[in-house]
Length: 272
Image 1 (cartoon, rainbow, N blue to C red):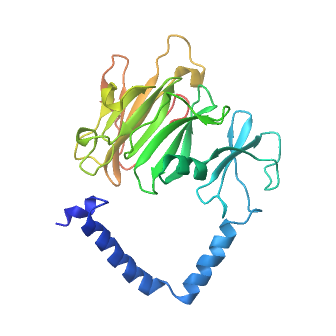
Image 2 (spheres, rainbow, N blue to C red):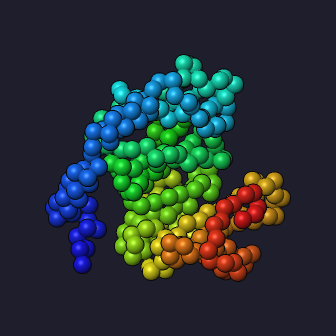
């Protein structure tokens, strides 16, 4: 078995990639391919291209790449203004400048907004375009990385906010935290400033599963009363097209919901 292909920086892996890329390039990189590539590149780099912003609080946000900023600028505009390309967009995060400071190439892969304080987000940074992610807390009002904020190890990971100062963090940070596939197996209740390895465990999938996800829905999101408890739910992908859903009951025990295993699940207020 070619297990060395699981290691990104193994010389044999790099040689295999170069060999396969050469085969693909020889088959695909025709003059027509190059013309189409250049046309699409020019379209993506047009300054007047359509902008589809994301709304956070009283601002709308746009991630914008140009020839001069290939890693992108995260910009904002008051929600009351039309998101035109020639509007007075304000840059809040220059990823090209950030990567120069870090001495490392990070690729912006989205942001998870805190519902408790919409100016706080977890910026998702891909390590060089890979599926290895770093979650970095950023203050969109201060336009700065939060000092002492969340900054997780580079790993296959995802997270959701479960409080003003804590997140549900699923990350393959070590062998015990990952499935055999290398995806997150263990979910943790991670507080700001805490080492993920020291965070209390919320949920565990099996080592032979593909990965686990989940989160906690606060009663404030459905205008719940003071006696109502948060809803803790978790999903396990057992195979690519098979999954299960688990919730924690009022006694604190986890139970699997009696649902078909070929489904998809999202949370909406107090409902799944």
